[in-house]
Image 1: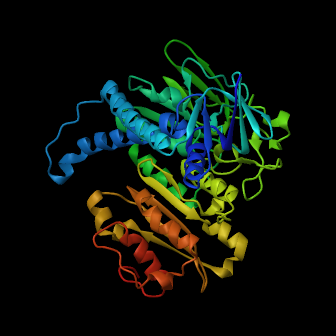
Image 2 (image 1 turned 60 degrees about the horizontal axis):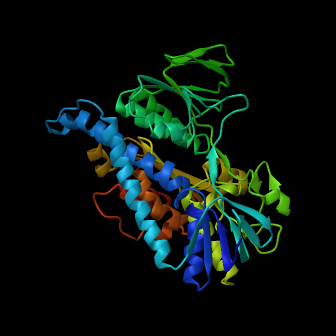
Image 3 (image 1 turned 90 degrees about the vertical axis):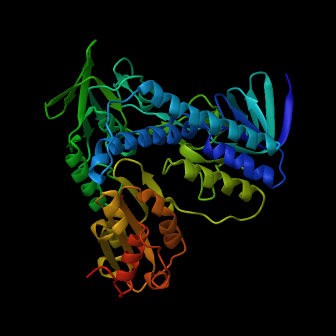
Length: 457
């Protein structure tokens, strides 16, 4: 049995954990990073990276089908899932090796094994005790299910979906949030029949309502079926498929049921409650500076209530390392963290929706403009419909940007700078947006709200 001492001990090597470790090492701290599986966590191995590789393969499949529309002779003959999976795994392997090299170059001590918090300043890993002047909890998340809904057989989660070596003929997806609509997009492009079941009134219900409705129109056009405002009741399965029963009495038959009802905090058995950490339904409760109720213990990433996004984890990891170092970093609210859903068409947003802005400031204090991508030359070339909606305070800053259309996720960088720097449309109007780019659509919306529209009326 050994006792190892460090300035900082990080429990969990996913996005939030390894970013905290890297930044702390940059600031001169000795750091131990404890991980029971692989560095990179959910995002690298079963989340962001593999799903986006699949979505890229799906985009290529669609491009092959539609190539004739722009004069290119191409033939789509099918999807080789073994090669798609190899493509995805090759990307993960390269990123994993790169991350390992980065961690090593920073002088961070990686400890492999399952860690358990055993005191406010120590984590047990097997027979060893890892002691830190400060502790960061970053144990990540897992795919949730519903009470009484068991995962197994033909009832699967996103992790199982990534390992499939065939394209199913028909898939039912329980949940119309980010995970559900992204897998629906992939499978439809690969040739599956897809139906989404969502208990709330809209797909991607956390987005601006106009964006949700636009996605519903796009999915209807693509032939993706969905049932909204109806709740799941149960599922039966046999060797050939599943039968999903809804509370309305309607049934849906499919080869598989993908359960995509969100992710839960992976904190069970980690010792947090036993040490006295304040918890709520498995989440670690912190103040706005990510400190728990136990001095010297912080939490980051998916175990902290709020958006479950890899880049939120990165930001929080950096924040905590700088907080410990006494640098007094700036707090970024979840509202002003950019979000992207990588379905086809893509969705990207940051800041307040029009409804939330009206609720917060009053309807007479806000103005909004919805720029249709039909007026954007590059979007026309790409063959995408969609819109860019900007919400501002009257005579004040931009408080929200909401977009839908092919590749609009690439526009979120400017949008999040505008919102977080509290820029006025009048501040941005003199700045140039290269032509022809989709980025011009942001410029057009800002010009309109600044009272000097160019290609709009």
